[in-house]
Length: 568
Image (tube, rainbow, N blue to C red; front, side, top):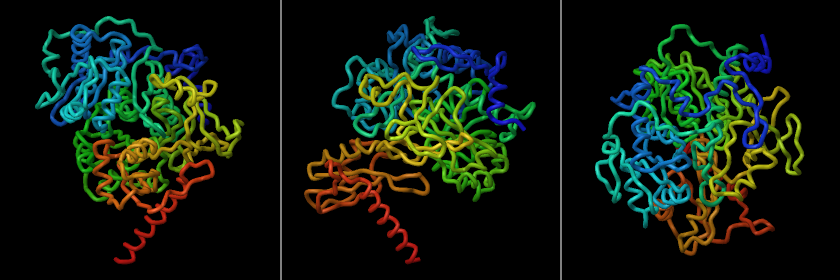
């Protein structure tokens, strides 16, 4: 049996499909795939076929039909809306087929696709549109109504309404009207290069507004081919099952939003080269997911730990045939070891997969799967072949095996930078290395273990919540004098959001949540709210002692659970 290092060397050698070479990209020497498609448009073109691509309820589109729809829309964007290379085209809707078509159209003519968080409320939506400078917005009815609730719509913004019953935004044009033009079999000619900007995904920071992470075509495609390489290496070393000869078309279930890097990259974009069928859900529901897996013979499912846990429970309590499922993947926050074992035991053929990545890394970083994951359930895996990692101490010293420090990463898939945020870029990048804000250690075999976070973030079911933004929203209330937001452990979601408040007068949790509804997305509103009659404790520098407040919240939660159990 060969080692992973030997397998990677064999698979990336000269002449191999995943051959790696060194080149200069944006002034840095990086490892790239010699045979990679140069742009996303080339990726789409190579996938053209009559095989089914997108499935949404009763709708089915082949790869060829999707290509032609995207070509028609791209022509409309260029000729009717004046979109040119470098312009920003925003998409804010559920995972409809139109989301994919709009993304393909924008990225194929050199525009930057801005995948907006569909959970944003009006103020957040307005910020994203103004910050990105989007010239066109694709939005469904829910997002149209939120845009209409903004005090003023960003000047010059053209809106295309998707599946809308009412045009609540003045001047909006229906998608069907935009597409009512002669068919186009090719995209409008545009000179797009591998290192040109392709996407902007907003990521929650520890303070203030979210930041638009901008990545190039090369960044994204390097991530896609990195997953292919890791899979083939797993087959060679015997920890992942090899593909079956003559197997029917593979299918993947899209249960997470496409504005997430996991949904966009690991599910949608990773489906083009193998020609997978993508089954999209209106919203997450585990029973619906199990039905779709059975009916569509789904082979892969990728989701945060909470959704995976939901599906494991359905598998245990129903008689649905989920035997076609071969892989249950995840990412972001580490899974609990018990869930890794539960996945391995709940499904007939599916093996667990996971990885650690960020929006800023285009979802890759380290990965692990199959028996390797079962044997190392607390690890997030080993580093991608196109990336380098290091662990750095508080004094800036690079640490050795088993020493804990900040995980830093560099390489081909790392984003180009944050849109219009030079101060954030200066803070995030150190001599070409991306500071992740995660505390980790690497063992002697190269397995990475994520153990804590430096950044003031809560990861709730795969959603990053910046505590600073929540605190800022709370402090807008005239009777909230001090606020501290933090994460508390949650068995299903990994973490839930809590907040401790010092208020001018007695307040109720309901009053606080109602106040936040128009200011924050639903997932950002604290589940646990505690009130103090005295100013919150602070450290010598004057900062609120958040660690103490978090521990007090955990103690209260444990006492509450204990009381409920004792009463049964």
